[in-house]
Image 1 (tube, helix red, strand yellow):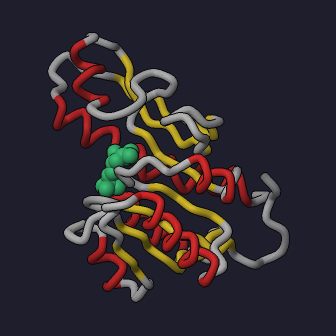
Image 2: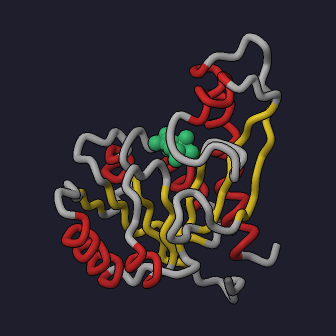
Length: 194
Ligand code: GRF
């Protein structure tokens, strides 16, 4: 991916389905002077997503799609992205798998954050599986999105120690805290020279 040249910020869309803590964190990051991104659109696959509150709060345009038909929903989303001249898509707890066609159109410009040390534990329930396997470490990963689930090029990872008394909740909290540091770091790594 090309480094950002000059002071223009990348027009970015964030895709969510739930709480939106990564969304909130990315909005705060984007508002920093030196941030390479400007968030201009939020797409949700769930009209009850708590994260939509941040769209309102920060006056960012949001759209919700029920995803009853994936092809039709994606077609509409692609139109929204074109209208807003989106250059980067950041998935942040987006619970739908993007089609090959969508990924091809936005090739190399879709990022995702995943709560495990990929390639370990792709998919859901990562913390549960880490604990069941008695792993000593877990973590989070920011990666490019390709046509296989949680399999694109890794941009950054953070390793986190699993303690003996950790449970799904405590691990989730620890990992999420690190996700909030990692996602902006990965964006800076890709798009700025500092
Ligand atoms: C995060 O753990 C992220 O890694 C995963 O979904 C969760 C989203 O959390 N893909 P939030 O909605 O950003 O709080």
